[in-house]
Length: 88
Image 1 (cartoon, rainbow, N blue to C red):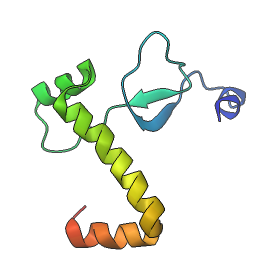
Image 2: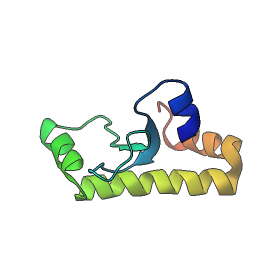
Image 3: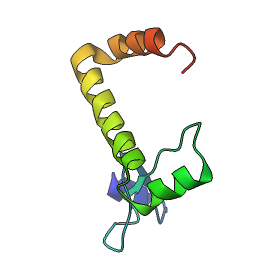
Image 4: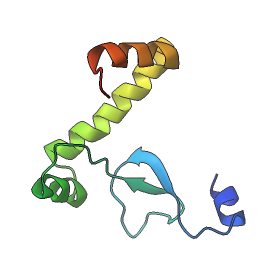
């Protein structure tokens, strides 16, 4: 992926991986912080600054989703999600 990003002329790319970035992070493999409602400005800053409980939950939520998709299949996961969170 990194080579394709560079060949396309981009200097940076974000992954779907939740995490923070530091000096050692490649600009073509940047991690992101998921911000969903309802988050206060303080909550967003806490997540951006590092491994706070909110950040830990977001990172593990992503892991849980990946596991459920692998176990249930994408269709099964989407059906479960519709039942549990109808407006998601």
